[in-house]
View 1 (cartoon, helix red, strand yellow):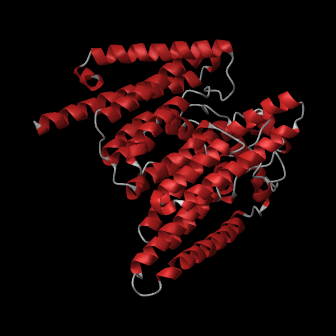
View 2 (view 1 turned 30 degrees about the vertical axis):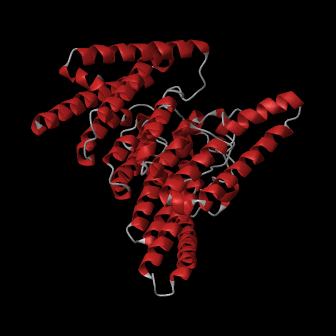
View 3 (view 1 turned 90 degrees about the horizontal axis):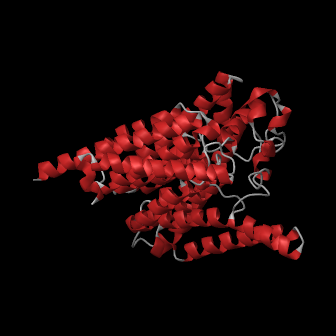
Amino acid sequence: MLGCHGAAVRSDHALATATGGAGSLLVAAGGTLGRGGLTCAYAGLTLMLLGWWWYGRAGTAAPRHGWATLGIWAGPLLVAPPLFSRDVYSYLAQGLLAGSGHDVYRDGPAVLGGQVAALVPEIWQHTPAPYGPVALLASRTVTAVTGEHVGAGVFGMRLVAVAGLALLAVTLPRLTRDGRAWWLVILNPLVLIHLVGGAHNDALMVGLLAAGLAAALHRHPVAGAVLVTMAALVKAPAALGLVAVAIIGADSLRATHQGRGAGRWAGVNAWAVTAAVAGVTTVVVTAVAGSGYGWVGALGTPVSAGNWSLTGVLGRVTAQGVGSPFAIEVWRWAGVLATVVSAGLVWAYRERIGALPGLGLALLAVVIFGPALRPWYVIWALVPLAVVPAAHRGLALLSAVLTPVVLPDGYAADRGEVLLAVLGALLGVAAFALATTATPASRALR
């Protein structure tokens, strides 16, 4: 009986993998056709989500069995044009700017000129890079090889993103032994379409963050602080991970020195070591990148007037009501205050919550109350929160809701595009229903 059950699970996993793979192919194909491919792309997104759900419902396979599924689902996205965002063109422009001697924290892509800069959205043409020196090193390394060849540059940045995702996939089992976390994070369509399809540097950020947290948990606090600092030098929110590293280090020292009278100093020592390592790492990496510290002042770059963040929407509505644009700034600072208060509450209950779940909640607060909101930002919090089995269902639902909200071209949708997307989703559901009723694997749906 056990053998039959195992065979059934493997069969369901295989069919779920095929469903998600077909969806990924449709997404990649739809991305090459622009508006005309919208129905195709949304049929593919629907199949990816349903295949992902089917895979998890059938029973979670060990991560070693999930690598093949990851390759099948991510492969088509790896060779597709940029999907769901045009940020990758900004990365390439910044790499070319740095390589030509420009200060990317002062000059925008418009200074560069050429084909790559022309592909950067107008809103970012004159804005400095908001990313740290590790992100800049990655962009500069890619463009040093590819030059201004757009296709090769996009593929190069995708390889960087895949490397970050692979690092995350390898280290996630060291954060939690719950195999379902691998399904939730690594095979998640939200993760795949944005980190691989969009080639976002968030992949490098979360990969380094996870590796640093895993190192800290396995009693390597210095390595943990180095890796988490490098994650923060991709994108600043990862710096919150240093708090988790210090808490983990303090707990480890208390356990080691229990009963020896030194436990009271464990927290001080852990914080001091973490801060010192973070400072040295920042100085060394910045010197290697040759970027200077201009990225600190450029952290506000992601904020745009039409951003759909909570505080942005409230600011625009209030500004219209009172007739003053100052309301937008008021709400922005209210968001900062709400983030600080949320982080303070997490800190106050850190012993009850735990270091990794606390980090996840703090990052979620940054996403919710921050001045900029993108669906893939949720992945920041998804990684540390994956260690909480009770949160998996809610996180999976949130991921499923956020997956279709951005068009493949990265721009806002009009009414016609929404109708095409809905049509595609309905076609995806119909195709899934036909496929499952035609195979014995339809038991997974009952």
